[in-house]
Image 1 (cartoon, helix red, strand yellow):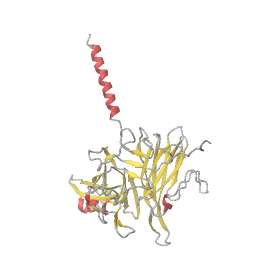
Image 2 (cartoon, rainbow, N blue to C red):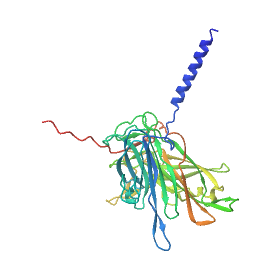
Image 3 (cartoon, rainbow, N blue to C red):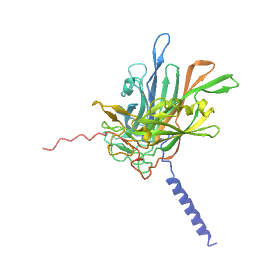
Image 4 (cartoon, rainbow, N blue to C red):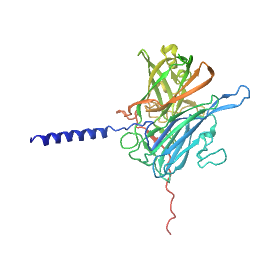
Amino acid sequence: MKRKPFVCALAVAVVLVGLSTMVLAAQNVANVSQKGSLLIFPKIDTSFIGRDILTGTPFFHDTIVVIGNDNTKEVWLKCYWVNRNQEVEDFMFRLTPNQPIWFRASDGLGTGEDGSTIAPITVPPFFYGDNETGELKCWAVDVGDESQIVFNHLYGSAIIFDQLNHTAFQYNAWSFFARAAGDPGILVLDGNKNYDACPKYLLFNFFTADSQVHYPVAGDNATFINTNLTLVPCNQDLRQDRFPTCTKAKFDIWNENETKYTGAYQCLKCWFEGYLSDIGKSKGGFGGAKFTYKNLHTTAGRCRVQGIASSVCWDVFTRIGEDGKPVDRCWTDPTDTKYHGQTATPLLGLIMTEIKFSDDPTTVAITGITPNTAGAWGPPLDSAQFPVPQILWDHASPPPETPKK
């Protein structure tokens, strides 16, 4: 009888230990199903598609951004458009309590628009809607634009429209929960004391280019034309005097027979978007053929992608400067003779699949998903090659007061 209190105490201790373990093992990796203080939309698209054969009318993509505030308090958001050339344009707007808002990338007009001039929210267009692709980052800030703040009540999505094929798809933004805001102008994505970490790597399944699936009931065939991949490094400098993030996306591929293919890669600077089967058709990539039915030999495949530092990406983004000499836009630190500006970085992304049906071969349907993730990014000992991801931005300073006389 005297042992029972001890047994109960032991059971309580086990439960408490279990609860503490659950707390320590809580979600600390960004994902697309939670609320947070930082939202990343990996693909914004206003690019040119083609022209009408008869009239010559141009058709474009467009993107509508939707952001919601799940709180009874208002908040200010700092946002950055970033295009494929890492040109940036920032803007700021207010979200009222419980407010959802939307705006178009092509012209910046949004919430409340009814076809007239009514547009309660206006933001800068995505580089004037001029045939651009890129991304959008938004996070909670104080009213003075002086620092990022903790406000884990934001969520969002983007809808990409195809005017030519009259189709669209929607994806959820990557959301980062914040535990602490950190120093002004620096969003630390460590998954520990600050914002959520980025995933260790991305996973996705895909259909090989030009493979087909037959529908017996409808008597129709679906042809998977191609798969489009967008990748965004988590480590990014958005300041006016900024430095690019350069890395190599390394692909490991498996077919349905569990055969593994390696060697495919894509060098990227700040942002990448392209068809899987086109990887390697231009400088800085290799192995796109591994994503085709002809080479993979199965209809479906799976892929794992990581951002690593690699010597094969040296000089890929070198351009001729104003003085006529080559300039490596990635190698900004001359003392970095080991990596030449290449760095390992976690990646975020988006997958788009283009499909045609045999009963309507002229129309292309588009569907999109965000990749699956595995684990949290954690830097090894070599912090020069594996830095903790950060988003750097130019925060405002408080206005000076009139000096006392």
